[in-house]
Amino acid sequence: MTLNRKTAPDVAKSGPALATDHLTKRFGARIAFSDVSFEVGHGEVFGFLGPNGAGKTTTMRTLGTLLTPTSGSATVAGLPLTPGNEVEIRRRIAVMPEAPGLYLRLTVAENLECFAGLYEAPDPGERISRALQAVKLTDRAGDPCGSLSKGLRQRVALARALLSDPQVLFLDEPTSGLDPVAARDVHELIDDLRQRGVTIFLSTHRLEEAERLCDRVAILNTTLRTIGRPDELRERLFAKTLTVRTLAPLADPDRLFGGLPAVNGWRPDGPGGYVVTVDDPAVAAPAVTRALVQAGADVLSIGSSQHSLEDVYLELVNQDAELEANHP
Amino acid sequence: MTVSRTRIRAIFRKELREFRRNRQIIASMAVFPLFFTVYPIVEIFALPSSSASALAQRQPLVYMLGIPALVPAAIAAYSIAGERQQGTLEPVLTTPIRAEELLLGKALAVLVPALAVSYGVFGIFVAAIELLAQPAVTAAVLHGPEVLAQLVFTPLIAALSIWVAIAISTRSNDTRVAQQLSILASLPTIVVTTTIAVGGLRATIHVAAAFFVLLLIMDSLGWRVVSPLMNRERLITGTKS
Ligand SMILES: Nc1ncnc2c1ncn2[C@@H]1O[C@H](COP(=O)(O)OP(=O)(O)OP(=O)(O)O)[C@@H](O)[C@H]1O
Ligand SMILES: [Mg+2]
Image (cartoon, rainbow over all chains, first blue to last red; front, top):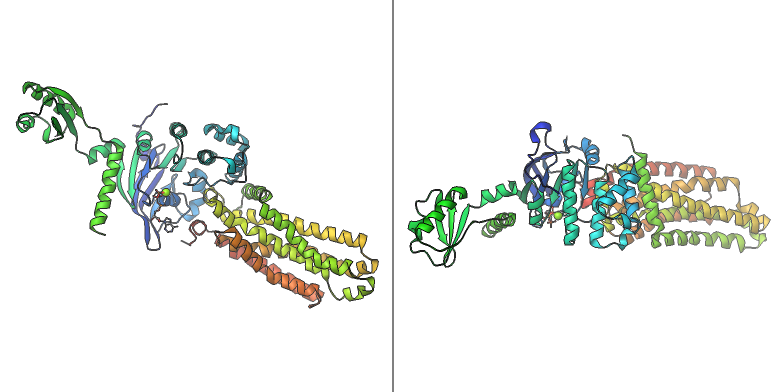
């Protein structure tokens, strides 16, 4: 399966699939999320990350018309989020909630039959068998949901979300509790849906999942901390660096690294190790290599350091935690 | 506003399937009717025919209207609390279903089996009287108007019980508590029917007409009061937006 992560979200042409503008939801005095603004293009896979209690589920419930926002506005599946549009919005979206929420006394097929009816699907039998195929549960159709394992229930909930051929699909931690193979199946399914042009709003605690699947991610911690492509976020948050390892410590690293093109500074990283901050690794790396060779150093390795989305996430969330500790 | 029959039917069928597989509900449907047939059986079958004239002062059949008061209360108490306990409200509420459709589907799914049980038990009872009771007793008990009243009041009383029980259910997290409260709430109706049955209040045509109008009003009020309780935010969080 191919990833076309670079597909630009087609926001300008037809308006966003999802948009929020200063959206806020409070429960009494408790702020669930506040002042959240973003846009998601049609066919985009949008990752929604954040620590426990950050407001991810509440945001999804608000966009899914279950909760009324306290203030701000939103567009869902191309429609303004207003009481008059709620039924039409719900026709265009599907939500897989945090808990599968299956009727445990009913079989898998009976659960799906009920929801096919609620969506007034014209060809319920066909849709149900397609949805079951998509999550590889065809052979369990007749089993009571109460007899399924946690992961299998999760997959039934996913099948249920696929029944209505939604334009926008909200997935709240779809792979939590799944084994690695089942999680990979879900990832492939998401890739598949992306290819069919479905907009996916994905909340997850698995950062490698977000990095692999999402065109863009947002990090929420009651307020929106950042938003962008995973690689953009890395660049925005972390200075670009080269890591250099030599057999023996350099005699005068200051003189060696100083004055090289595109190099801003350096710091030691263990004996014979140096982290060199640079503007552009493509310019700096050859210059650093030449300088090292000229100085007669025995170079073990030079590499540009990679920060993962996890580093970005931890950095932002830790900043918030420190802020809170200093200003309780 | 147009309501979708497909969606109402989807809820209706789902509810009936769940009821059929819920032992507590099956037990309620079986046990409560027994409770309301004991008194008429004693009155009608155990008495010597010489006291048939005494029977004419009472209306033992009316006692059986306790069935449409109690059975739907016990079942309808599950309607929302049961979904909340299973965590199934959220997925249902994210579908295009309207609050009114959900309410109608759930109410009908209780009304149909409740009517089947009430009419079924009543029918069997009448047949038993015809076949087994002494002719004098049969004549004293089976009056046309009373049989008709039974048929007319059964759905009206059942509907009232359903509205009250669903209202309780929307506010409850626990099906047992909801069921106990709903049964408690149907007691006033049972007090009235019992009073009539034992001869404490003579159900003349005027009394019957007054109750008929009262029940009609309460049933339509019930719909108006319960519909707004089906507000999505309230059902999900327990508080209104
Ligand atoms: N019905 C409610 N009433 C009051 N507070 C609520 C309610 N629902 C959520 N909250 C609060 O709103 C905040 C956001 O909760 P939410 O469930 O959206 O977080 P989340 O990001 O989904 O967390 P997690 O990763 O644990 O799923 C939390 O502080 C939570 O306690
Ligand atoms: Mg959550």
